[in-house]
Image (cartoon, rainbow, N blue to C red; front, side, top):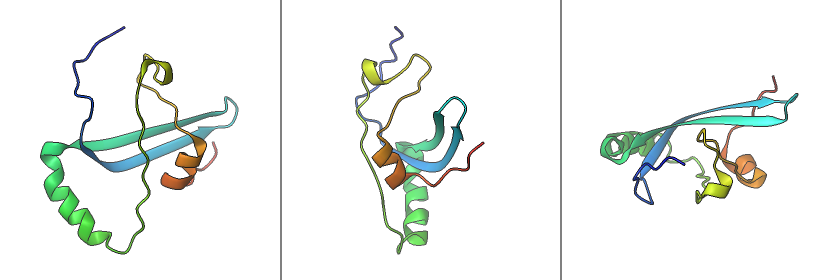
Length: 91
């Protein structure tokens, strides 16, 4: 197993989410694009202004070896997905 010497928490801002549902394989794939803490300050101010009236949905995911694959994939409860991510188009 690879080791990456990362801190237990990495503060970041999600700036884009791309999702895809493959019905044949019954797989749901999501790519999250994040900015690290150093670059987040300006982006947060801009997004905060643009999203004053929007409702915030969030969830916390604790990563461990049992819920993360060697490729970096991980699973999330469907209730969290339905609450926090935009609807997907089937392919």
